[in-house]
Image 1: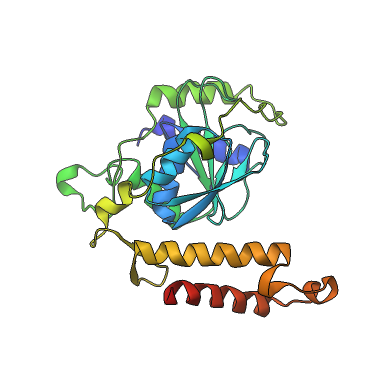
Image 2: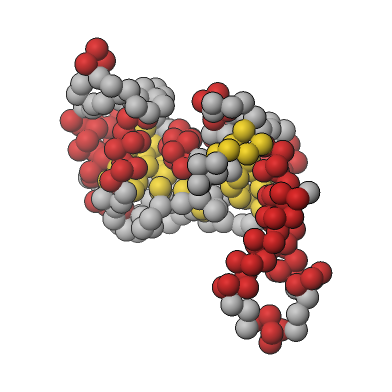
Amino acid sequence: MYEVVKRFEQKVANYAGSLYGVAVDSCTNALFLSLFLVRPVFVHLPKKTYVGVAQAVINSGAKIIWEDIKWEGVYRLNPSPIVDSARRFRKGMYENGTLYCLSFHEQKHLPIGRGGMILTNDWMAYQQLRKMRFDGRTEGVPPKEDVFTTHGFHCYMKPDDAARGLMLMSAVKDDNLDLLETEYPDLSENFQVTGGGMMDRYNPIPGMFIEPNGEWYKADEADKRIKKLEEALKEIKKGEGRYDRDPLTHCGNTVEDMKQIATEALKEGEDG
């Protein structure tokens, strides 16, 4: 990769408080690469956000659970470690353990015009993302001499954009206010793209998903598990149904109790 791009990555990483930065051509692709790397089955998104975030989730093969939450500058794509920080840019902003995605759109804090970056402290994720953004290639190795071990996409940052970024970083302030929320539409009402996405294209078995333990299961079974688990967690939150308990007892629940409840919900999904 171009030396000016590496310099820009390190400059932003130092400013944000992370060890590494992976520059790409947009925040949307920063989110997509992060999602494709992590491979969550589902993520929670605020109902009002940029449509490109939702498209990135679907294209990665994950499902969306819409949440009626308000956010300022930044939010996390729970339960994944991915953070959308398109509207926040300040010194020390990086959150340890995350894949922290930035935007350099012309209307953002660092208005390069086009570009994004993934911040991380994870060396393995850093190395993998560098290959993924560059067609799966190893930087500095001619294609005829390379060995391709990961999925690749064509979304690296151009050197002229990185050079402009370096120039803008020389004048950036330490404490920038979050950008005011744009009038985003309620995507839970008008976003109708569903299922599949890029991830299915690479699965050995179409219509299947892979669990963290490496076992395959059918997508409809995944839907049942997720639905049952969501119902159980909602009942726990409201103190309803079989989880209806007086406040004192409810507060005394242990982590093991919650694990058991979640296990029961997942088992119901399998049996259903």
